[in-house]
Amino acid sequence: MMTSERTTLYRDKQNAKLMGVCSGIADYTGVNAMWVRLGFIGLIMTGILSPIVLPLYFLAGILLNKKPEHLYVDKDEQKYWQRVRQSPTRTAREIRSQFRDIDRRLADVETYYVTSNPRLSAEIDRLR
Image 1 (cartoon, rainbow, N blue to C red):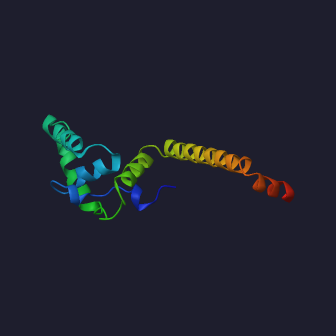
Image 2: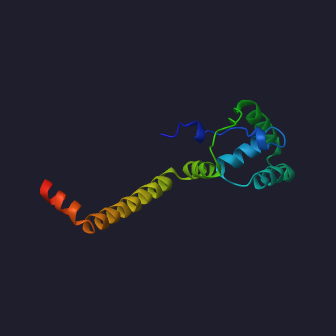
């Protein structure tokens, strides 16, 4: 279940131009804030959705919580959580794959160490 504070949409006042809604959407999705802002401006300029978009923007600016200052430890953690929000299943699959790889490498180290250390190998055989 994704109810972590890192999976919530926030206003990003640290990178804001106006209310921080576009930069919050950019942080949430992992899309560059410039592209989100250009898309927003494009929606307004077309005039088709401007009666809906502007009120929604200001409503989001009022209702969304401000992004906590220390939400992520570093950029890698920020990118990780953006991937989780985009595709939790794929991210979980990638993590399982990384753990399988670590487990395989540890088994290789263990095999190497046991076979190259006859005293340890004899001790393990004695315990069986």
